[in-house]
Image (tube, rainbow, N blue to C red; front, side, top):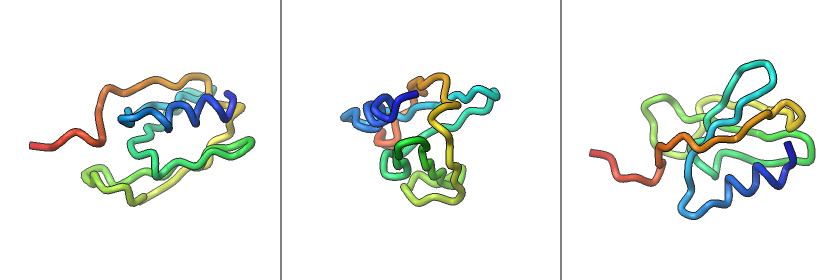
Length: 83
């Protein structure tokens, strides 16, 4: 995957959460653009706690761009009002 591809997904306005699917079958959901940083060969992705809608990460992964096979919108909006 090219860094520009990930940056394009992060730059959508309004932001749409998306899933990165890797070559080994794992997937990571990016729910907040503030919690993802694209580098030349990796993506740092922070993940909030399951019940937390704030862009503060509880855990993170550093993902090699070489292993990202697919980026797909998840259909869930982080900016959508709750309740």
